[in-house]
Amino acid sequence: MTKFSVWHDHKLYKDGELVTYHETRNASAKDIRTPIGIVVHGTFGNPFNIEGSISWNQRVDVRGRGSAHVYIDRDGVVHAMNRLNQVLWHAGTSKWTCKDGKTRKRLNNHFIGIELACAGPLDRISATTFRPKWDTRKRFKIDLKKAEGTVGEAAYPDKPEYNLWLNYTDDQIEALIGVCRALAAYWPTIDECITHHDCSPNRKWDCAPTLDMIALNRAVFDGAGYFDIVRGQASTPTKEPYVASSDVPGITITEAKKIMFDLGFRITDLNSPVVGKTVRASLLELQDDNNLPCTGHFDTATLELLVSGKAIRRPDPELDKLDTNTLRSRGSTTIAAADNDERIAITVPAVFTGVAGVDAIIKGQFFSGLSDMASGITQLTKPFGFEIGPWNLLIGCLVTAFSAIILVRARLRKAKRVADARSGKAPR
Image 1 (cartoon, rainbow, N blue to C red):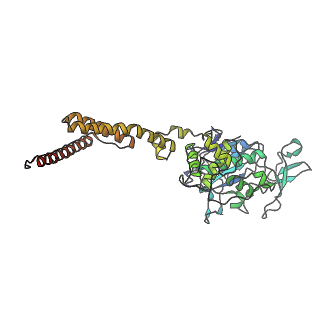
Image 2 (cartoon, rainbow, N blue to C red):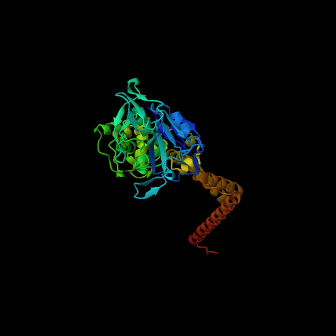
């Protein structure tokens, strides 16, 4: 099963390998600070030659220069341009009221763009042949007899004459869903997919009205099956965030979230059973990686997988390069457990060494006891991450040693007075 993911270099990977990348100068120098959505486009070119569309978007000598982050061919092959968080020129003059209620313009600054290989609106030539409306030179035609796809009939209300479209293939739609899920998993702020027509009505008519955007959004963010939704076989989506519960003995939702975090998935609220869109997106990735039904929930099969310890770790070369301190700062439970074992192994002998040092000082072996105390204190602070300089260590040992000597002398004086009182001698 194909698996898409976004890594820390802000590039797209398929099954752990970088997808085919192309560079373009049709881009802004700045980055998308916080991506909040995805705009789905259609290339409106030769649908069987997406490389031509990519090459066009690399040119700087044409009018209306543009670019998008991802390109998906009709066979599901994925190409990408530049970094996914770089501002590319795909939406142009645009405006959209986002889910947070804010109306934003110039969506290039906020949305990631995906291009699907698409012929655009068609004219019928015969019962089985069609030609794109933009092809005024009649350079090529689409022949259904050659198994080049199927044609669907649908239109946007503001352009009823554009009512014939080459349907997107199943491979194309599945790749689109996989890429969108990967983007939403890496950037939890992404919460919707829209078309170019949605944000630029009366100006743009891609990606095509034949693509069911309601089904696409539910497939990406709710884990439902796109084709099940289209056929009316999908269940009602779950509202989020919600408090999940475990039906598998031996594991709670909080523990399950911590296991997923250690496997490299993006998890929020590690100490809470609340499941929001970030956790849902990570669950979809986990289930997809391990060939489980993609429900986006902590169902029985998912919890049993996490308990078994056989879940596939999310591939991330950057995570493999992180040192122990970085993993510790991220709250890794594996590192925390190792730290606890180390503390127990070091603390007990360190305490005994320090006590032996105090005992040596009491017996008059000052320098030997001081050395043991210094060794014990150094060992004791090491597993807790404290750094003690040599002078601070020396001063601490001396203060502790003199305090021990004063305490012992005071107790000896008190014992002497008690003995003198019992023997009838007057105390000094």
